[in-house]
Image (cartoon, rainbow, N blue to C red; front, side, top):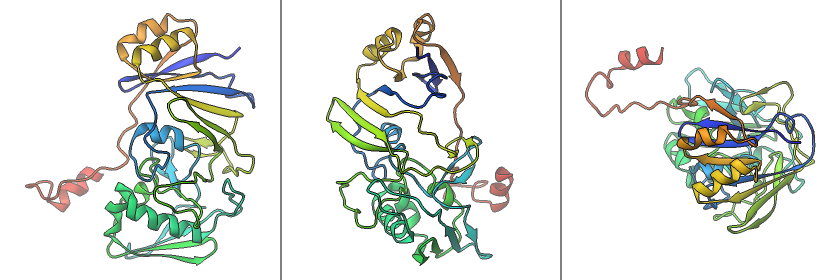
Length: 298
């Protein structure tokens, strides 16, 4: 039998597959989401629903660990930053395969970051600071900045408006091929019915322990199906009955009903925090004062 439990996430109640599923390889889970994602291209959307699905398909150079610090994902390590803060040298992991069987190289990374600059809200934010993105060799990329820009690695780590790495020859807009390096790949999509992801056998995980979104990533499941269920009451009844393995975004007032259900066990999660903090330096002091900003940073 599969145990199921629930997570209280800010103002949402989520039912997810339990610890047994996390220990045994194989099986299929059905995930009830709040609706149909508007796109499966996480570069062009900041919607949580898009990120929930696509983070299984696509990966970024960096991500966040359990303490919300930037950690490498497709990059081999954190970037080497020049003394003047204007040049980032990024070494890439080698032997990483895309879902089409091709191997990731610096050429793919440069093309993807240039697409991100043009299409993503976070990429557009960064674009004004970037002078040039270059491939030094097949496993090394440099980002030359016009001036130091501290948020760069954090912005490269988000899974929405995301700097995903996709093949250099598949950079269409809008995206027509959903080819990433993630642990699962898109098999089928039926609008308003389901999105079907299956295990990518060519996936190369990082070594070591899992650490938030970083570290080792495990492919316990054979298949994940995301099913749009727009009505919150319908999702609630499905969670109570155990119809789905994971039910997303339920109203908090339904917590007690879910707790009484034998199909779900509620748990409480704390808010994740703020990976990026931006000062409004156009406002009056003290926010325009460098010393005041430094004190907040400490």
